[in-house]
Amino acid sequence: MQYPLNEVFETIQGEGVYTGVPAIFVRLQGCPVGCPWCDTQHTWDLDPEQQVAPSGIIGKLTASATWAEFSASQLLALFKAQNYHAKHVVITGGEPAMFDLRPLAAELESAGYRLQIETSGTFELRVSPQTWVTVSPKLDMPGGYLVRPDCMKRANEIKYPVAMQKHIDAFDHLLKTCPPRADAIIALQPISQRPRATELAIKTCIERNWRLSVQLHKYLNIE
Ligand code: SF4
Image 1 (cartoon, helix red, strand yellow):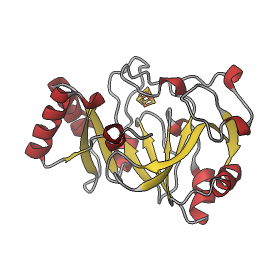
Image 2 (image 1 turned 90 degrees about the horizontal axis):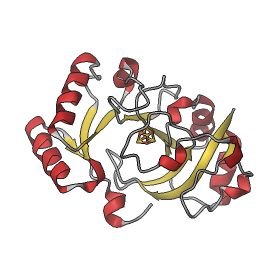
Image 3 (image 1 turned 180 degrees about the horizontal axis):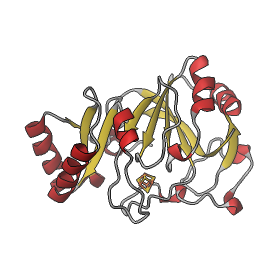
Image 4 (image 1 turned 45 degrees about the horizontal axis):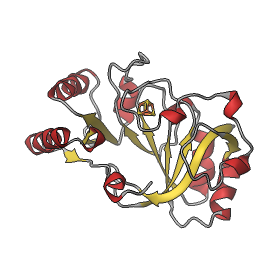
């Protein structure tokens, strides 16, 4: 199994339950969901013309649509070659659930890593039972993909981006029609650090006893 890798880097997880945890981010290429506010639009197209050799991804410094194929064992070797210290690996994108992540999870978990996937919940999840699943549901996006009930049920954490009350209303409807497991952690994340979105998220989190996720990395100006 080969994975289209856009970039890999070590940093601090800035969102959700694992905020503050040192993490290796593995960003896969490709996403058809089409969120208008997406801050990784360069990952949307899996354009064959943008494919480069694996060496073109290592140490990539600027966001771009280039990608390279990596197997799970090549990725593990890359972690070692880069002398990464973190043991928490975040598989993100793009939409990483477009790919079968079980071979990757098997390789990394047997080497002592813990996996987290960040997904929109619009593709069937193919992950290990141990993988921490963060579903960030994307509703009514231009790509026309629906949030899947099985993804909502599998989620350890549901992290919902909000800017306006209508987003909370849509999220309430989703929680009713696609109920999560009882122990799922629910968090609201203000879109793009907008003050009104942040106020709304804080108010709603307090009222509902949900968590606030603030994209710490953007406040710290780190990747
Ligand atoms: S699902 Fe994620 S990567 Fe895809 S368009 Fe939306 S925010 Fe961007």
